[in-house]
Length: 599
Image (tube, rainbow, N blue to C red; front, side, top):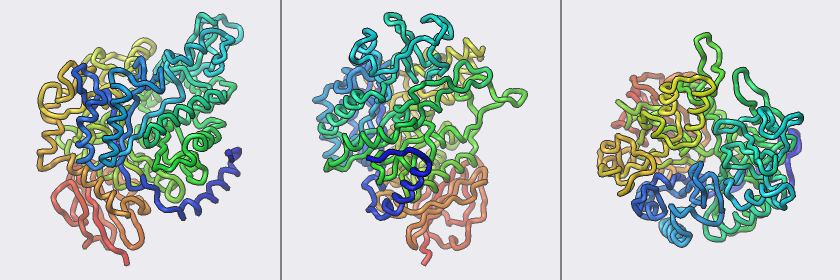
């Protein structure tokens, strides 16, 4: 098995794989669409206020009507739920609030009967602190599983628990230090996220053996693949050095020591060989990779390297929002993530365009704007008031016409919006609560400013219950929902939208059908137009002599632009307004797809 060792080897591997990759027939997922279910908030079948497997089973025909090919199911494993299931205490058991393994098997069979594949969310950078592996690991310094996690003594010259005694200066993603002291053994354990999520030590081959065995167990059960949470964090610089610390920050930045670390390609190639190689099934592997570069993504998704099928990257989510400045035009000292600032469409296009270009011949893109960790796209990028329907369908059109595999997040297909919570007590997300406390305590941020930021950018925006109808609790539950239903559920819900002549759901359905039936949509080459235009998002897709022109006015005002020559007589394929020629001005949030033959 080959592994990457230096830049020269990587370039040679990529160039050699390029011609081989293009000679292969398209993968089955090249014209597929994935639908993400966040089970806690999808549908509740037993009235306890928490979504469950029974609720999913009751709504499968909704997914069939939409036309999706794959369901990505966020974690339903046994968990104390500090991070809503991304802290797993037993990989082979289910959380009782979601259901039983027998119910899971029935759901899986019903999905397969409907032609839908199921992808499980796999979280193996870390476990729950309640996992049996960690309980054993922390029980003593000489326990056989001690080295299954990252343990370190206090920094030299410091006593355990003393300020500054942490083994390095890294901060955790959910606020605070990335190290927590275990008082019984006097050592610290590493957790890149919450203290209840200790990081597994992938340097230990026993850890990798246990993970691969568990993955095979799920595949043998019939699941169709995995979406792997922060999978590019599993390889770390074993020295765990201090990270750079910007002025005013509480902690150092350890990203350079664990994002796409030194053995990441080796580990993923080993995983492929031990879990996926030789299986006679159409499976899919998706790697969520914060901070991944497009150069590394080419390697991760190059079929010849046998690592992953596609990556889930964040550049297009993070880059379009430059860090806000203070009154003296200096960057804020505190975490800029929580400070809302306008979308820079030019930067967004630059990011999307670069990933389209760089993965054109080798590799594959995951296409998304909504998921369980992000605010609602119609609120964040669109206009969820006067132009909710138009902006929701405009962004859907633009996204789904890129080259890659589109992802639809639950509720996106009806234009669900951000919440309007007025109190921190209404929020449930561990990340939001942690940063609210940290920014308020250490930086003196006005709580009202922080609440406004959470309403704009917090993860709970995506986690309120799916709004199925205009009845009590939006048809999500007969009980008290675990998090409040968005207060606009009477106007925005599945039943109302599907009954509307301007249905957002219907527009999504037509986009998905187009990808299934149109090879230019699935495989055509991408070329960005007007990259510096601040309101226009336009590009072409070309396959042979068939060419599509995709254009969107991403603003509240009419837009006139000089359409490239040769498109005057082009056929309208799909739009989110009434019929219009390619040369017509674009109405607010209008998106159109036109077709012509170039031969």
